Image (cartoon, rainbow, N blue to C red; front, top):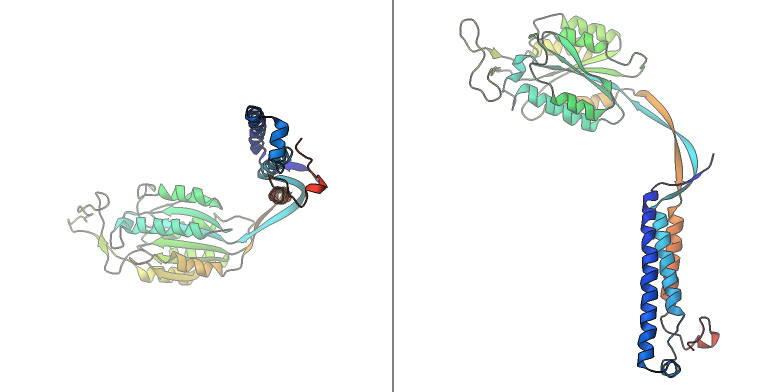
Length: 346
């Protein structure tokens, strides 16, 4: 059903300036007439100034008031008619499983493995458009930090709250994280699904390779990103920048090393890719480029009404009136005086 509305009716308050301009115009005309009376006889003055028109200033003022009115109308954005549109969104579903074990505090990747991974995930959300993203955190156990969603603002907020104390049981249960991810996708979504495991790879808890194979059987691709350098680094226990490191029972400093062999096997079993992070880049963007090539499916569709803007018409009318004002001179044109279009000053 067609209808008419103003998208921004608050601009109609600007119409209040028009009565103010009218009052000022009337006052100026009265003041001018009084000045002319003081100057001398009106009939004599009219003979001395034959080109002066009494009506033209009024007509020009009226034109500018109409111009102002049409500009205000255009600002109010009149809209007429409506049409029903259907918005369809296509994308993939992506779940990132982030290792939050104590070893992720190692500083071989600056400022530390966990913080660098969080920054990379945050930048990744800025690239997402119609894709869904979910967050899982894991150490000795796995938990859903953010259910799969297209709310990228919430994703960043949940991401900021992640730290190594968010999971009470320490360890690195990569298999549990993969299994949790497979259960976290939208049940009826038929499009491409990808799991990205971000960890240092020191898996001591479960069968991560077997979990990756099961995910692949369910058409869920498993990618891995290794956080850390082959040489490894000690684990600070006093916060970022601390020189107090975790030690074993023999009082030796524990050095956490990247287990690339494990992460490569997990990625191969899950049909995905393994990327090693370094101080230059984490590799999430490169991996996302590969995910973008996957087949996208319709996430959802919604119908909404769209109104047709009519404000250009009012702007055109205002422009035409301005042109008319420029064509009407303040004084009479001696060539057109005989036409008496605006009358004589008597």
